[in-house]
Length: 236
Image 1 (tube, rainbow, N blue to C red):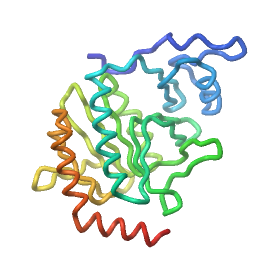
Image 2 (tube, rainbow, N blue to C red):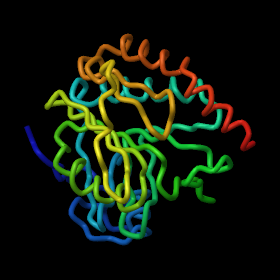
Image 3 (tube, one colour):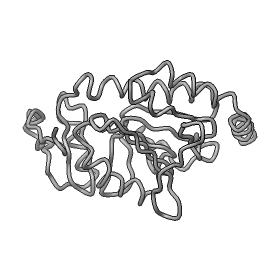
C-alpha cells in the first residue's frame, strides 16, 4: 500500500490567467486558495506546512465507506447535542502555512465559546475542537505532518482511522502534546471534549455501524452528556 500522497496531474487544466495547483508547490495560503478555486474539478487538496498535497480519486471500500460511517456517527452526536456543529471535508484555515481539509470536524458553536470561527467568506478559521481523518494511503502524513499541525494549532482531539491497519488512534491534547485516549473498562473510547461521544472502535473498524451507533446512544443517554447539553444551553 502507498504510504503517502500520490501526486496528481489531473488538476492541471486551469484558465490561462492562473497557474495550476500542483502537488509539491510551495505556496502562501492566499495563493493556495486562489489556485484551488481556479482549478476545475479539484475536490481535495491541502496546504500542509506551506506544501501543496493533491489527493487522487477516492477508493470506495478504502475510504468512502468508512468516511460515511464516521460522518454518520459524528452527525448523530451533533443531532442530539444543541450547540455542537459538524463538518464534512471543509477547508480549515489554521495558520499562514496550513489550510487542511479534514474528512470530518466537530466543534462547539463559536457563539457558545467554541475556539474556531466562521470567516466572512465562509471558511472555518482556527482549531475546531475535534478533527477526524480516514487514513488509507495517507497514514504517513496523517500521523506525522498533519498531527504536528493540528497539535501546534490547538485542535483538542484528533481521531485517525487507519483503514489498512485496522486501527483507530484517538488523541487528546494535554500540555501541548497529543496523548492517546485511555480505553474505558467496557472497551469504548470516550471523548473528553464532547461528553457522551462514545466509540466502539472495534465495531467501527469492522464497518458495523449499527453497533457503533448503539454504543453512541448509550453515551447520549449518560448523565455526562445531559450536563454538557445543559452547560451549552446556559451559554445561549
